Length: 217
Length: 217
DNA sequence: CGACGGGTTGAGCTACCTCAACCCTGGTGG
DNA sequence: CCACCAGGGTTGAGGTAGCTCAACCCGTCG
Image: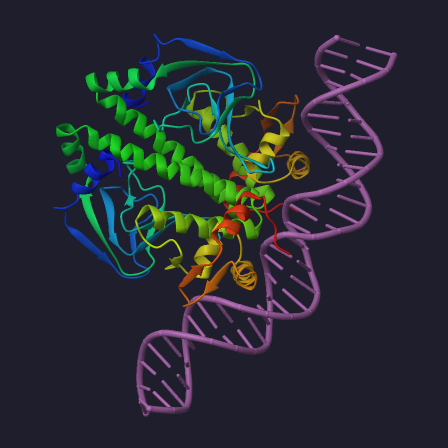
């Protein structure tokens, strides 16, 4: 954990906490953006829609992640709780006042935003170039790496989101996601335990799969 | 043009200019990131690769755009000149020194990075949910809107990138891109003039196409 | 215990890919 | 100034990954 990040983390300690039930929106796309959020626990889906309802999830935010880090006048995405979620909220003006006292805070936020940008570009790579198997492998490995960074188990992966969420994230359909999970299970790469969690049995093969250097029949 | 942005623009006036020929790389993914760039003229493609050479272009940068705005230790993408390109370059340490004097500069950079994030997320929407026709319409409209923002003609669109670049940007193949251009031409939406430019004849239909509210046979 | 929502599986379809031939254009050199 | 060439772009024919639609399964909750 870099100094920048820890400074950002301390900043939330005295902020009010807001709660959202599963399915509730924290903000809608094009809403005025008044606050910066840090997720205490739970999970958000961040998504875009087309006119006919097609949905692209552009990211998930879990405990420790920020939302609204762009500081724009209006929200660029919809933000919706996947499960009951609590988040620290700080008004943008409050944050900007803190920045005046401590300019490093803005650098920390900038770093967080850079990470989000890298994730969005990696997602474009996944959707645009990877096959359904490569994409799902990338998704699972991504969650494992996030767990590792947070000091959680990188073998047991919790999946708060539904199959539809995963499909709308990877640009696939629910059927293809389900079939691909089954295929991974049959190849001994993962174990599907409870409905919303899995065990990784062979991360090395998943990593080769996501890079396109391994294939399964 | 917001004050933040104009402040960012003035900052480059005294910076050294570097030149790159078509196909030359300004930086490679994972290179140490030493500088911040502003494109004086020309164009860059920003891209990721998979192990077997599949390429996802995650953005194009044209005159007035920044590169390296993430200020990370290492470059997150490859950056390659599409055509002969000149760019202002400023070392990160120089930029950070300027920021100490004028903290607003960092806010301006943050805003630019937010714009990049929004573009990357919109790209994910395009690749993940839009059909080839909707995707190409979104691409053309995106270029037209950029031109409008820069005070250029939004009817005459210059396409410095090849069909392969467009395909690798939209997650399609060169054949599909070419066929879709032809279809748009046959429907009177665009005129294909020179090889690397086009005229928009019916932007309203293109906009409805990209939102999924109109179809062409 | 029944109903419901999410997940899995199967059968058939189609949008887009693959591969290959052809065309066009701009650049080069005779 | 023209002939040639190379590389990008277009078009066609056939194949296939992943979609659609529908049936079924299973765990949860009233």
